[in-house]
Image: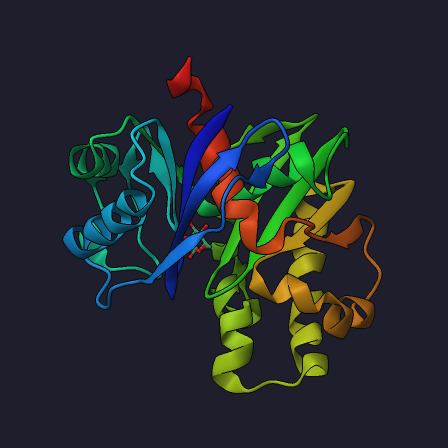
Length: 247
Ligand code: BGC
């Protein structure tokens, strides 16, 4: 079965039809720049452009970088504040004419990694952390997701943890890999102690460069591995979240 997935990120909005049996993109993805400011109207229009490019009429799943409950976007840490309290599902459905599901971006990446990637077949507590502009989290027990865990906003040294340990923070402050790894030690040490996951999967764009920082980290109780789907995890997971709409 194919469903369309869209991933709304800080710099780009990417989408493609997804082959849900194999967990891969069925066609090359199409990307438009994320509008700045990332106000709802402009972002909805950008998503419509991506969907229109494929003349897609079936169900679509869309990621959002904030808390999403029942299609409503409830927080907006790294996007325009106008998203808070919006019925995002209704906005996207009206603009595209498609049945729509909206899901937190890290939750989407997590369900894709559990089904098709680094956490495939793993029992027990699994935690996916995406290191990007912010830090996203997806928490699973025996493959079942607890949505919207928002562990990037745990407090670390008196600050939001994502200000201390995200890939965005590393870029902004021009930290070396070694210096950033020390910040990651603090953060991963905290989540390891609080949740005792058996496995931590590290995602986000920077996971492509995992050999630059994962080997520098202090050992944890949890096993720590890079994500496998990398750039496509959000799109694949978004489509998976919309699967029930096709039935
Ligand atoms: C948001 C999360 C999101 C993460 C990654 C955080 O600032 O609060 O909802 O998953 O960034 O985009």
